[in-house]
Image 1 (cartoon, rainbow, N blue to C red):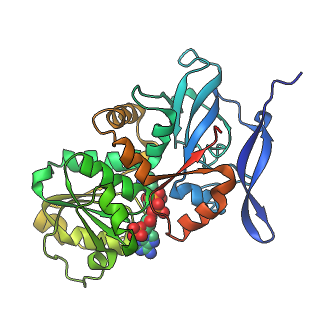
Image 2: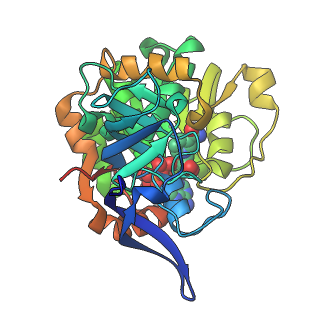
Image 3: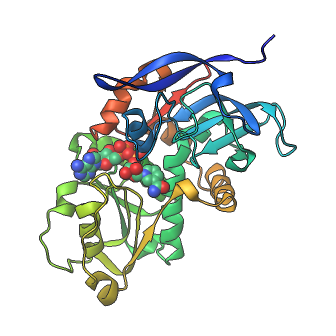
Length: 335
Ligand SMILES: NC(=O)c1ccc[n+]([C@@H]2O[C@H](COP(=O)([O-])OP(=O)(O)OC[C@H]3O[C@@H](n4cnc5c(N)ncnc54)[C@H](OP(=O)(O)O)[C@@H]3O)[C@@H](O)[C@H]2O)c1
């Protein structure tokens, strides 16, 4: 008798009409051979998943494919003594959901090196309410702190504030007593952002439509930019003396045209965030912070996240590609 298990997964497929996503029944026989077979209970939707699901070959080379760079679940088979059956684990990024079938399937097969034990004081569900977007925000905040920016230093700007990373950055900064200004294109989401922790909400055009002067008035002690491109350039030029800008996103494309003056006349630092290749020792430190002193209040997690099942994901992916998401989509694969 076969030991293989049938399971449900959201599969991105190429057809004559382009890429679509369908819930399919797959077998664990189709998963790659790896140390650990994990029954996924929760995942979350990230921008990279929307790209993979829509056929972006810079993210995923071969289709049909199951996206999902985030997964939290329980080990059902282990080929290593680092983990045993029944352990609760988190797997985020590395190659998961890029070219290794990801967390939008009820089972994943992953190397032990990509996997960490769920920190105490965090449930599987909470870990995916945080997920890669929370980890990304946390990396950016650590970099701002390492640059000496304290709550007393001044306002911290978050761009793309209603996005998955942006809304988490707002919530985490507020948790750490920073004065957060949220820049968004969705002015109807002001209440959402204030409740997440912003002290002020501004239209994103107020940040980006500022002309070409190489230095603008010093508005921000620090910033987390999730948008990139002309937005990031404008943020850099508005950042105060010795300020720190941490950037993670390329929503406005891969180009960054800026000038040297904010760096050599104001000592501004531009720090990159790459949660995908963060070292395991850094992930462990950050997850322990996120499970401990940095853990958002349960009502803030619930406010920022919306729970969906696999069958509901198609419109959510489309909405994310249109820049229309507010907060974060938690994917329930348990029930
Ligand atoms: N480097 C890393 O480690 C890392 C990790 C995670 C994500 N990322 C990247 O970070 C970015 C954000 O990811 P996410 O998961 O937060 O995506 P998301 O939920 O789709 O958020 C992106 C936000 O960008 C804003 N936006 C959309 N179109 C815009 C436009 N034309 N001009 C200005 N702003 C626009 C929107 O916020 P408003 O409507 O509020 O303005 C949108 O909600 C993506 O590029 C993603 O690939 C990088």
